Image (cartoon, rainbow, N blue to C red; front, side):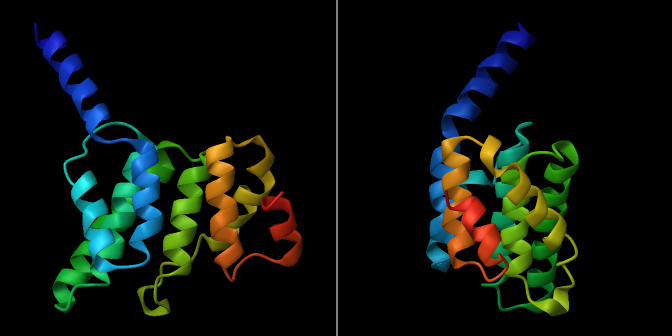
Length: 161
C-alpha cells in the first residue's frame, strides 16, 4: 500500500513540475523579480530525484537572492541555491544542461561572492558535448551563448549550428 501511495505521489509531482515550463520560466526569470519568484514558487516544494530540476531549483533560489534587500537573507538564499546546484552537478556530473545552468549562474554572480571557479570547465564541457545534445538543450545552449560574454567566436560557431 505504501508503495502505491509513493508511486502516485511521485507521478503527481512530475505532473506538477514540467521541465519544459521550468526551462521557459528560467529564461524569463532573468528579466524580472516577478518571473524569478514564479520559478521559485514552481520549484519550492520539489523533492524529487531529477538532477536537472534540482539544478533549476538551486539556480532559482540563488537568483532570488539578488532581489532581497537584507544582507543576511541574500547570503542565506544564495548559499542554499548554490548548495542545490552543486548537489545536482555531483549527482549528474556529465549532464550538459546542468553545467549550462551553473555556467549561467556563475557568469551572472558578482565577483565578491567568489562563485566563478567552474566557468571554464563548464564552458568546455558544453562546447565539446554540444553535438550530442537533444534539440531542446541545443536551443538552450545556443540562446544563452549568443548573449553571453564568455564564448569565443569559434565556440559560438560550434554552439549555434
